[in-house]
Image (cartoon, rainbow over the protein chains, first blue to last red):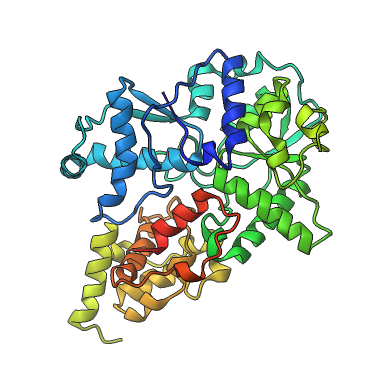
Length: 291
Length: 127
């Protein structure tokens, strides 16, 4: 059971389409949750306002109603919000009761749904060997910077990897035949929603993170967060326009790198990226040739 | 600094909203060392906590809680297990619950921004 979240249907459509393609190659069928709503994007930290927990819990109720015990996510922010809301009601039955009675849906949430990120599916259920199998165009000479950001590994209670020394993206990169590069900013925040009202913060972070990756020799950077993608891609281009000496680093979603390695970059919608990955990825695609 | 009863209220409200123990903080500064946005803040994260500890209500008008993006860099470092972003959220909430939104919708240029940025911004900066 797959929960896309809003971005995957709009600005991150290339993330969803490449994930669908990569999953098919791996024999995984991502069945979309029939009734889903926005998770709220950020987990509410105020202890007394349960209103903001309703959105993520509703998605879990819908997964339960449709008969599934696991909800798979692609977006790091959805993953984080759903997991933390789930954890809140796992540990606090009084809050669960309040949310259930407020929602007044057909069913109460029984706290039996597990939220898992697509990377956990690849690592823990499939294994990296199987992820390697469909590789048609090994990314031999490609050096890739893994960008974990905040939401995959923090807080530790729900993180899918070690918050200080995560390896899951490095392992994905290796399994696709490329080389992961180590750089200091793999888990540093991109500035998140400051991109709305405080763009300067995000411009600085986009420059710092991409320059850090470039200095370490990376050809491109991968992420699983649509907000990080926007900040590192679009804001990095703005920074590059203001600073011509900046070398732009293309930003790919995790499943776009998989689709490229599996031989079908056309599903990636690279034409929608602010920083063109076509010079970096040595494969001519229909979409890129249209330029 | 003189601590009056009303100053103590600030600690109680922040503790209630955040679910954190403010007096557990012994000012080691690891939160501030790990924060990527201290350049943009008028008070470092550990200074925000200190001001709440001593009941200094001027902290309610600090820019720091609005710069904090809840990235949790500090949360994984705190040796006392405090969730510092929850403390920042408590200070944001105290302001938002006075019916003063941080984001002025009339002045906001949303052109080209993805929904994930707008929704998260509104969830954190409007009441």
